[in-house]
Length: 308
Length: 322
Image 1 (cartoon, chains in turn cyan, green):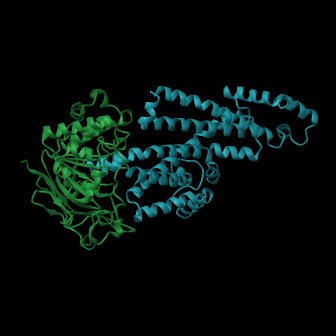
Image 2 (cartoon, rainbow over the protein chains, first blue to last red):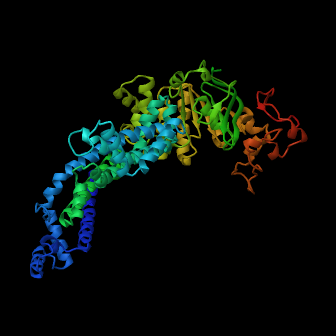
């Protein structure tokens, strides 16, 4: 098990290297001159050249990347063009809000997706199954900006039960988390259903029945534990995607998260912040995936055994 | 003579599929006594496994045991029991082992937990007692290092070891009936012999009845006292193994025996039974075996023979002129 953990942790390194390189190149090839952006239209060519030199923009690309990487490893992601504050501080101040939203969305998605998926499978082709699958189809196909606005209209504007936007306590979390979690819930429902259906027909489920176990134990202990394996992977991937994919939801609900920070930074051509936000979100994604893989190994004795 | 443990009367289990009704088991009657092994043989799809699952009331949808079928086991009318009552029979008084030891054990639970589960359920044992008893059971079925194996997961065991674990699980509560559905088909020949030896010892030691389902006639000769030959959902011949093998009364039994390879003498082509099992949706009007039967006469084409008891105690469903 320890070997597996070490292996998985080490695998994060090349992933992060790749992400940093892509982010770096993307920013570099984006049209627009950072020096011009900082000094404004009226700056002279000399001033611009001086600033470019200061910022290291005149050095060869690999050198620039090495500098960027070296600094990033020490927690220095540069300074925001707009605020002048360190990017690290900016992003870190926004990450908790994003994490909170993503966790809430995943919790909602799991609480809806897993039970509905299991029931759909156990009562295949029943009314409940059909209703569940229809909901899943809706959840997967409604765009989040539309769903967000509709939820806001209904629960905040018309009913007045929940605040329409902002981040102020648990009640303000409900609507954005629902919006963000809907797609994940749909995916988890479908995954759980198909995984359960596959497992229910396995020989060992028949063995469990032949033992005289009550149907509940057969389904929820013998079948569910096995069906959970692929579902855990999907939940983990979804969680990672939600961390980075909260951009639209955060914008709709004026949620002060890292996704919105990135959008604001892109609009303002604040490249260091964009770079920092993307990098940090990617890092969070990688960490979440690492945790999921470890959980998977914990649940699956076959993986554990391979790395004994 | 020991008591009859299991008695099946006119068992009919049909599958209601989209393409029509499939009479997988159609009027099967048989009985097994304590300490005895009854073998059910036949080709794939002849209904032997469905017969076993019907006894355990584990027939998967869309299959259904029809009204009028009777299954008596140890004084109980199994088909009349509630599902809850039936659960106290399954795994407890009547246990079953399956063909595929590789997939019949749950991959995410340890062997000990899976054996102990039956003990805790039916015998009310605690966790610790169940584990100790599991080790004991594993030792009894000849599992090497039972103390270690009890904490292993199925993937760490070979096919033979898994089947031993399955048997230990089936025997955990001291059943009066063991249904073994092709217990050795998936195993190596040497392992097969070991597993059979385990089953035989346990049968002789405890006086439990064994219903052995197989297509392997060698296995029947070695293990069983009596044999029922099934074809297309019906029993076509039933009797003592020695008698049936010495002088098969039904052309189908004869065909099965003839298609066995022999070590003596030079073999040319093995005689195979021509044709295939008839499709359940279009069964012949007369004898079900008639289209494949070398001895078929005009009467066989129009009239279906009953399974009749002969003076020597054998049951054969074939017209007398054959």
